[in-house]
Image (cartoon, rainbow, N blue to C red; front, side, top):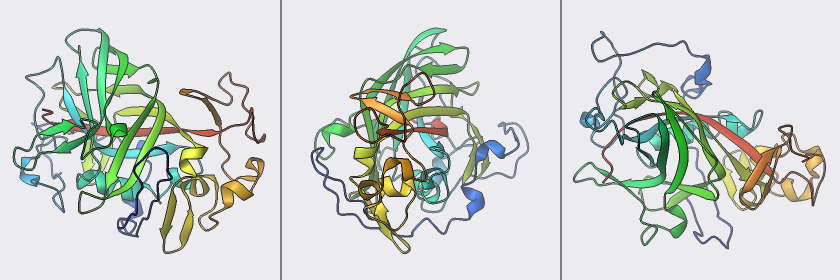
Length: 324
């Protein structure tokens, strides 16, 4: 997979995606919410195995969820890494279909897509702070670290803090007042393929396991029953800045979401009211709302007052790691 990225915030990001990862079987990227609940515990007989193909140090993974470090000794501040992502909104778009899902989860599994979480203040019910964002793995120690926001990382890749509440083993947060950016690298781990940019991101619900080492349940080496949901907004402007190109597809990310896999000018030449999947939300700076949730945004209106973003929602799983 190739990319010619411009990593500054003031220039368009060129996304060049090859077909690697798209040959993943569709059964590996379907809606995990339709799967039966198959609990897996350390003491229960199981034929499940953690992924090994192109996974760094696969022997360090431990069932039941392939965590790399048990969090049982740090229940007050569990640290986890995203292991599976299933985008469910915008409904009907290729973003929530079989185009992006295999690519994202292959990148997660091979650790080219690193999204970390640290929950601080988890020693009792009440206020909690979630530090989350892009991180790197130290190949020597096996530990992880959040981006410093300095070279070789970009300032926009620094982690953010989500303020929320812990009730029992369930976490929810308020929307972040800003933009969270998580890059996804190619096989060289040095060239960016995608910058995932989410405005007003929040954790709607996340349930930790008893040892706080797992979120979600492993169903196969490539699939999880997710145990958490996050939401955020993708603006039309940021989506229209990236171009996706591979066999059969030549369009901006905006076009892919809105309804065209082949028209590079779809979002600029076609009125929003004619888009197959029109934007359903309005973002004014870092404040966003969904149409139909008390907002006045009409997706059929172009220009001022019209929708300029999509609401993105995704279910995810995560597993314990050590964050330096």
